[in-house]
Length: 554
Image 1 (cartoon, one colour):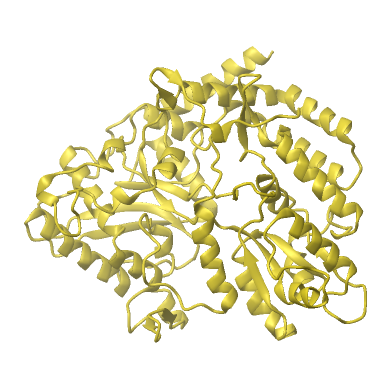
Image 2: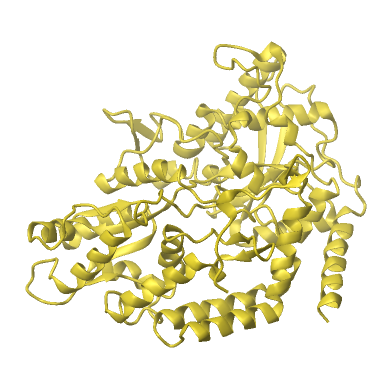
């Protein structure tokens, strides 16, 4: 039965690829490189209903800048480079990409937001340009003080190789990613509570550093009246039905792999919820729950109530994205001006090095279809334009608009946004078009509060300790078919183990059910995908980094 299903999935994937590849060459939109105003059509996602078009002064400023940059690079006059941006609402974007693949009607540059089987197969079959070798391409004629290596595309050369690996297919790169903060996770907490308890002699630190410190905080926030109101009405950590925020971060801190790790004994890649570190993290949360350091309604509390418990002074810790600290520091001031909100990126497990749960580092990537970027000359021009779109000038225009019109600079050189709606819509959503490979740049928004400044410090420090997901470049046809059911099995088991409805034997039964429901095929898919990627071999031998080798309990 499973072999038949496996063949069927491969046939389905091949069929998707064949349908999207059929009729190549039917629709063409040539780029007129002889025009003084060449136009590049870009399809990307929009979060707003009124995204900027050609009438926007910000779009016009970007196009003028691109014209000047291309004139300098190619030694010919370009008055401007038109960015014909086709905005598609984000909720319907995946359908639009599917329609483009099925009809073989592409823009010159197309954002891909989901790496599904169809995208993977089209990448393998050459629908999109393979630009792997272009990121580090050099030419002596481009050497300068700013570009001593002579990179042909100096901004693209700054792309993070780890993130490029994450979007690769069989070790080859078909796109330019939209950069997102890698080290975004963190722990928001009431620093004033910690300081109060420090003064009382209950805690011996002002900022937690280790898991032992976190244990002590959880207990003290629950038992030692951290807000000083004489009532036992507070607790340690707020947990909602979005269990993965706190649990997955805690698991990484305690030695779990990030989603997938290699079991040397089995010679197979396995999911993190089968590892020792992950089970230890669930057990730690189980202990906290039983001690009432976590809210008793964690299995039913809606994630929308996460902040209200914090803002109303009931729970003192949230483990999620670090930026939650900035928002809550702003909002809590209205309720309690004496409250102090702080954030850290991680705690360590004893003397071990820090470990941080990262994002993938990107949110979609831009592909260049062969059908609409037909020649090497056109490819070079489009890559040059996209390279310049990653320059400081264009990134700032996309994120802030025009200085003096859309923002001013404070005494520290930070941007202060002029936020009238009539001005904001001049550049709203351009940050969705922007890639920002080399960011963050010098221009940043003025910090709303001290917590916001600390958030940026957390982002910067977290990146060096990120534990990346080694399976990020790969997909599983088995998971595509059964993922919803498989995820539900584990989600229910995790929650029930933490709240005490399952013991270890019960959790193991859930793992066995996951394996029988084609979880074993998912493991096989990822193991084969890793082994089939030629870039994972060194000197002819399959290379498994030490950071990918973990102990597995199940």
